[in-house]
Amino acid sequence: MQTTIASGLANARDMHTILNPRTGETVGRLAAAGTEDVARAMAAVRAAQPGWGATAPAERGKLLRAAAAALAAAAAELAELNAQETGRPVGEALAGIAAGVSALEQYAELGPVHRGHSLRGNVLAADYTIAEPRGVAVLLTPWNDPVAVACGLIGAALVTGNTAIHKPSERCPHLGGRLGEVLSPIFPPDVLLTLTGGAGLGDLLTQQLDVDMFAHVGSSETGARIARAAVLTGAHVIRENGGNDPLLVDEDVDPTWAAEQAAIGAFSNTGQICTSVERIYVHRAIAERFCKALVEQAQDRNLDNRLAPLVDTRMRDAVHRHVAGALLLGARAAEGGTVPDGPGAFYPATVLLDCTDAMDVMVEETFGPVAPVCVVDSFEEGLRRAAAGRYGLAASVLTGSIAHAQQAVAALPVGTVKVNEVFGGAPGGSAEPRGESGHGFGYGPELLDEFTRVKVVHIAVPPTPAPDSESGLAAEAALAGGEES
Image (tube, rainbow, N blue to C red; front, top):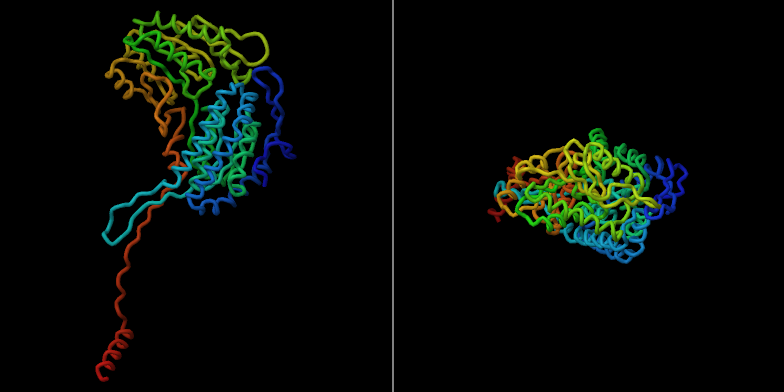
């Protein structure tokens, strides 16, 4: 079987045309994998799994390190594909690929030492747990950091003995297909396969009864569909989905520094980061200075054309609908807020003032370079508003008060709370999102637990067998014979 099933398929469901979001020019057209392709891929990875699962973890880790080296060697090519399909600047794409290399290396080290626990029982018994691969994993990954996210899931899945089918986002299928061609040959045949396609392919995969696990990073709507389908098939599901991450700005911080943090959080990668700042609550005492500095941050990015385009015009239209809806409800665009002329899917860094929680831009995931600001009269009011909503991915708090920081950590129903830095954190961190933002660990050492099942083993000492009548007579006769001699 080919390592990548991407184009030229006789049973293709549909064709995908990918446009360069900078120029609007065609990058290429690919056929989506269809029913027969899914069936062949499922049969192949299922057949390969027992042998791969029996491979020593150290050997699996060795191959993962080789895959990391192959990815590093192909970085320039993959970064260019990333730029063409998603508009991400080549330098940022290279950083994402470097993160993917690190993820593979990390799991190459963690996999062989992923261990069970010894249990206390009878002194003559042995009790312990072992981790076993779930079996066949389907990995559905996004376009906004496509290589890093894919490599994290691929690394954890393979090093724990699972075989995997990777479905990259339909917004970057050339990149996803090429990533499969780089990584798959490192492993035994059919351990890692790549299928490209859109929502139709995703639906086909979720209907497969032979899938043991789904790992999904993407929209909440898609994640919910996968979770519902898995109820019927019994597959284990982990998912990191949408967010509406708040930033709470206290009255005792420097407003210029706070505005810099807000701009980093809202405008980095053109606002297309899972944990981007999506809504801002600033204390009235510093609101005027903060908003002025935030507008200046946005203007700097717009004047020097620092922002990359959004991934496509469909995404830009969705972002602008949120902005236009907020303006109709009384928000004020202090900077940006209009669709620029010219080709591509560009959208300016936008600051919206006088926002309320009645606006979609404050309660839904916008996923674009938009910073909506709501002024609050107290930290407690801001915390209450920040804690509201159906998402629970992450939240940021800027404060000089340890008491307020601790209040925020306790009150915010999210997987990650960041205090005084909107991005960052120690390597190996792994959080569980809440609400419509997903479920389960998606990163770090805990991801190995998600890809395995625990078996408890109890070994006891059998009793010494009592001698039966015949053996007892034979023993007596032998003893008697010995005495006569």
